[in-house]
Amino acid sequence: MAIDKQSRRLRIRRSIRNKITGTSARPRLAVFKSNKAIYAQLIDDESGHTLTSFSSVELGVKNNATLEVSKNVGTKIAEKAKESGIEAVVFDRGGYIYHGKVKALADGAREGGLKF
Image 1 (cartoon, helix red, strand yellow):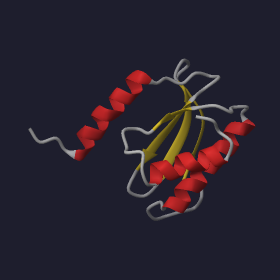
Image 2 (image 1 turned 30 degrees about the horizontal axis):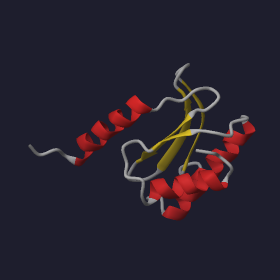
Image 3 (image 1 turned 120 degrees about the vertical axis):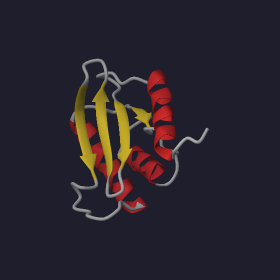
Image 4 (image 1 turned 90 degrees about the vertical axis):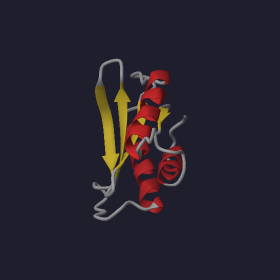
């Protein structure tokens, strides 16, 4: 049985979401990649609210996000989290392989001061 790339990612994503949840004290740092941008959100799953978010679109990047842009998104989401009083998060890679842009975003968030 052939499984396409998108349905495989969604299956992995559901598996990850069954294991981790975000709280108001330690929200979930969710990552989403599109062909044109990379997005990061801090989500409180108990109340179902997005606490803060940032994307490469806000940096003014119009083409596909590079590793450098992904790292900048990570540092910016960490800055916004610090302003909100958040220091620790749970990382949700969204079914993507922890490699390349996802890893760069995570490294940028760590450099910005988030702990996960």
